[in-house]
Image (cartoon, rainbow, N blue to C red; front, top):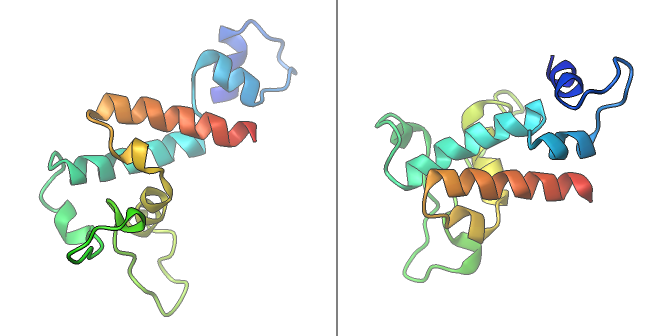
Length: 128
């Protein structure tokens, strides 16, 4: 459905290929990256105390000790699992994705700035 919408908006033919260039031209993320953007936005809201209260039961920040190192800045604690069961749950996926983000994206002042920086980050990854 997303590809059909892009073809319509860009006035492309029914059989024309839809790739990263077309997504960037229309300023849309593909479905997977859009999902990750929503998940990371929930994490952003958690760190800025804008999320629902139950998030504190699901998400735990990594212990930074007396000295906050660059590698531990705004990190989430990843729960250790003995099996692969539950590895694709949103709580684990969100922690993994959040911890991969660069520091300047995590430090965004507002949720809109965060989403724009995250979208550009995803576009940059796709181009490489």
